[in-house]
Image (cartoon, rainbow, N blue to C red; front, side, top):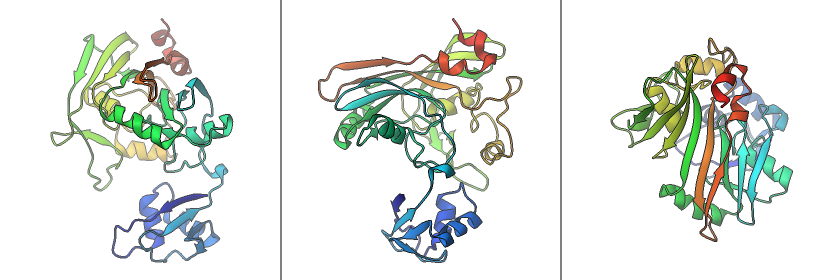
Length: 313
């Protein structure tokens, strides 16, 4: 059962209006059906869709796992001790609860598969970004490690397949980034380059250029949401397979609704954004020892035959 605490942000708000606005993956009629069937309750009681929410109400949602989108449950544990877990994730699994995903998350899969009683993601990778991820085994350790990331102590490198061929060995992008103001048909999760944004710095290093694509190593000097994806689009080389950046918001919505296939000509159907977290370093929360972890991007990218000559050394 999924539970969350309602925090009032309107003077008077009906349950159905709140659900439609907060959880956009289901239409109003679908939420009404869920409320009427008793799958959604307020403070443990069945209510009607017009129920007026009160600050700190507990809204619960009984959602079978079968209703959630399918995920790739593969993972590879690189390191584990009493405080941390370092794992390689694939490109089709969210780390933690979000939107349509509640049970089908990496943290839940790890708990079920390895018997961890609790897990906390220290940093984030998008659902479609594969590679190395640091997870804390207690809330206290997560807070401690989180301070390292806030202070930009960990070192991170990525590899990406970019659409377009670099003419120079490197591209440095220092354009400020800010979340878009949701207006009309704008997708609210998109970030954009704007003078009002936060300072952001990304270095793209070409490793191989071929057939209209660039295999690039990516170094981050700041940690903004969607920074690599946003900067890649801004530089004119969006990530192959990115459904949000490098195309219109309308196209993104159509793909998310299943009205359009994720086809990127001339490369065909690409299921995920081809971005891989290939290196992470940090200091162990107990010993202080510097920990370094690598994850090979090739196995993930070679799932697409069109990339064979670009990816294989």
